[in-house]
Length: 592
Image 1 (cartoon, rainbow, N blue to C red):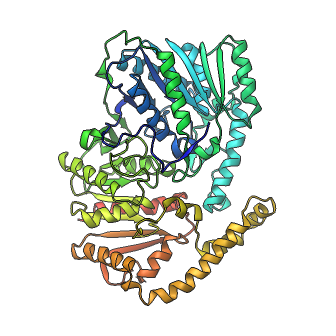
Image 2: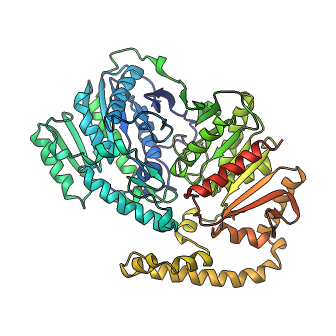
Image 3: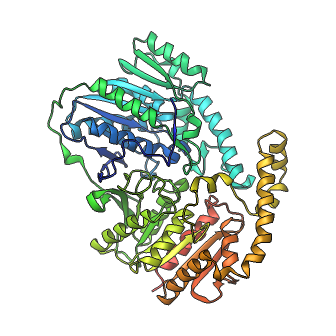
């Protein structure tokens, strides 16, 4: 099966149809989303079992949403959810039952799906670790007709070892020092699996299954994994009817979420496969929507999943204190195509910490990211475009309606860019906390994909990395692309030389006029602006080109402040950098 770059026409995207976001369901200390079918409901419903970690964060939520939209058109409802302790789920709960907690959550998700749809038959689609859990659990779930296993984890021990290698590569790419890396636990990209759950994961061995998980199984196998073929043979011995197809370029699906490739043909195949199994029989029972909605209450916070905007097209979560509110609310904006939970669940953690201090917030997915469907007429590549500003405007409308108006806006990277331009255009934003914005101006026609693939770093960052022993070790092992590094260094030096000449004319260029005009607008309206940069972040070069920092202030702009964080990466992975981020937000919300 092939794949397509994300900026191509999305799966079954209809230009003039506004799709509602899936309906939220709170259950088992976590959050689920039910996508109702269009028209008559068939007697089959699909339940998605997600992977864990970076695989889930990168693209799976959007991948599930695209498949769910296709299923809905065919009369098939679907249910997707976060495992407890992940995503929007609670993590302040008892995990002593280990992986059994996740098994039980999947079983309960299946029951919710049956009730909501009225269907009696269930198809489970699982990916990676989610596929393994589905294979272990399916036999105990009533009405399972079929199971799709996408690049399944077959051996838990092999999976955790592979995850450790992948984690070290991610940490190295982020530039984390050895002291900043999470060790002695199952973790990746600052996401850490609960030890009790991890212990159960390490015991997974699908080749030891004693009962067929479902009568029909579709295995989308990775061609470089011989164990996938062994699993197919084992399932057939158990009496399952197994179809095996190749899941090519799986690694590209779980790479950088900005340029990762969504395998649209795989989505098409899964929808067609499920439709054949579903047939034409209508739902046996009347759908029961009483389970929709709900709140998630944890230590010092209460969260309400919501759909809002025109036709309820945007998916988000309100996080409120259990006691009295104080200060301004916070509107969190995600970076790139990260779902609303943020890198390493940073946004979830900050929202709940702030709620314990009385500060409310809304986090949400912009259109065509995470769980929010595309906005009709907008380009598929929504980053650094005006389209997302309409999403922010509708979020502000919603906050006005619930009396949480005039919030502080907070975002990192492209989320900071979006927050900056939204603050310039919408006076309902009372302040902005902007973390590592790469730029304040995006030239029309500039390719987001090309900008990401260039992989720019500052010359200082290259210099500090070059002095580390581990860099030399990676170089000798062939893990570093020396040609690309030299290319970027050459660009960096040439850029510095050009920059010195351009700096004399910076206020006369199209970009310069746009940047200064935007900052002048915020200054005139006295909108507080807090800029936060990792010390060696590439965005500082753009900032330093246009502005002169004076201590924590900005020359000529009394409304702006600047904080520089040492020993931090672009994503603010180290704990000390996240503390500075939340401290800045807190100060902004309570400034009055």
